[in-house]
Length: 418
Image (tube, rainbow, N blue to C red):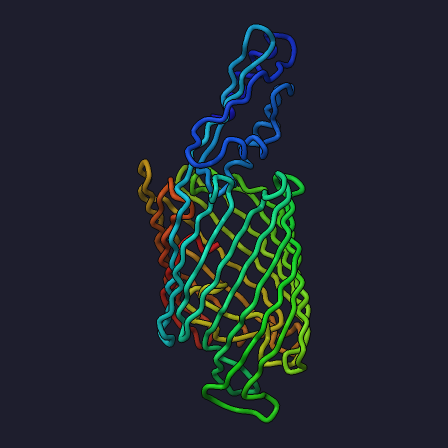
């Protein structure tokens, strides 16, 4: 559609002999999204020269908004060397419940449910809350307003009271602790361009570890309650193009953190990881998706290492927090094939391979090449989607371990795995 409009525009402009001026910019198709918000966000303005490059960028930026499922433009050339431009918007339904359900052959059943409104006040402000049960109850609240102050500057706020049963690994033994993390986070959000944005902020939180069962060690306390602070920097380069549930392009997300501590048992550390994602359309109904995650943290000799091996983070079917490390390399690759594509409903199947390796606490980089640290899990899954509801993708994945001591399990969730 965009290509056809652009070609028609070029043909007509050559006939006129000069560039046309935009006499009117019309926004149509909005129901809940404020037109004033869209006008503030887009680059094209009344009185500017008509520029298809600018309009293409505006459309891509609009399609990245949670409230918009699709967008395109129309140009009406007028005889007085002016033109009217119309941005046509197809909105998403944005009040979305979500659920993550996860289990494996050796794990108890756990779940997270919540509710998010992605277009509060018609200005793409996200308000959310969740409840999780994973041996213990947890909850959290969040507010994200990326365009609160200008079309580039916003804020995000999060509060979490998170508890779970965490395995702690030391020597050749394992213990189970009740882990609680309670804290607040404040982030400033800034968008350099429609492809580049950053987040910068801090959080204050308290971590509490309470021994439940398993092995003990003189060097590992049975109870810990530690006040911490964290500084975070995120840089996101996003050149993905969206066509409903299909993605194409490249994205890089860098996350750097410094965590300060008041207790040497949970010492201060630096942590950084980068997600590289690449998507490729295959024919009309296929999508090849890839994610490479590289992570590195201060290599302290602690049973509470920051990187975990987990169903819901990196390896489908492996179990819930089965190991920890201070470095990681994880590759997820999958092929998604649309089986049914109706007006609103989509059924998609996928085949995947999740693989990863970790550096042991206080270990060397050669740990990454050791077979006992390598996990490879191929699997299959299904996606049930609604085209007009943001992130309305219910997924079921089954992963089966083919490396040493491999487990298997089913992972449920809302949204694509990556």
